[in-house]
Image 1 (tube, rainbow, N blue to C red):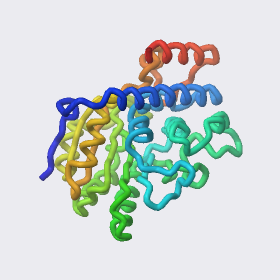
Image 2 (cartoon, one colour):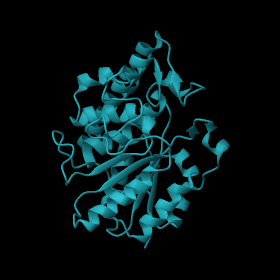
Image 3 (spheres, rainbow, N blue to C red):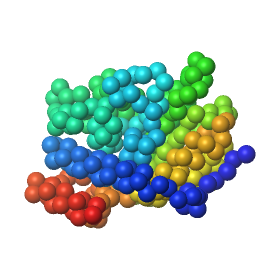
Image 4 (cartoon, one colour):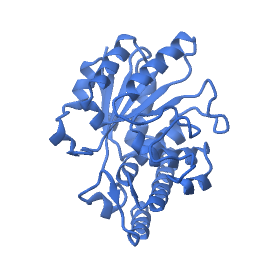
Length: 290
């Protein structure tokens, strides 16, 4: 049976657990700003918006061996939206997969941290990002492959964007996952209402998102993607609701979250931040996090 869960009505989450993740999210945001300053521009708004999701994943949910990123029994986290790499690198540093000092090389020639994530370069990166709409299909293949290997321990997570819901391949993969009863697969959809060509609803209306995923056979939750307690409940529910049904967590996030001057910036998909603004951004982040 396919259900829709409202994480906000679930039982309270351990406050110490919430605090741990919130502190990790703050560090992920700060690292993203530091990396962004290296280039002077980039996908900073998305990194700030998705930091809470990544903090929950990398500090609370994923089974990893930081010193052995290829550990066979690890959970797989696939970044379908390759241009969110700046956020993923910050999360990988938080998890101890890459050294924090390496973040200083972000986007530089010869760096293992290119501006769009590539599995061939970076430890802990499962797939190379590029054209959108492919991540969920790869995740379905991984989940199926693990089943055929008889390894039912690892979980497969795929972070994709609301803009990727414009792509037919995403929905083909969603249908396949339900057909194959891939209870080891979780799709995390970042709904920040923005894509390269403008507001998502202006490019291609995607709502009602939750009802669509449910209609495709997924256990579906929709939560505030910038609320750590809501996210923790949602991830916990996704792990325990149904062993034979894929789970979708629809996360409504705010571009630039935590830095007010970037939350209101008009051109926010690929954001240029002036040299004198970076420290202001860090100061605002510190003030918001208190």
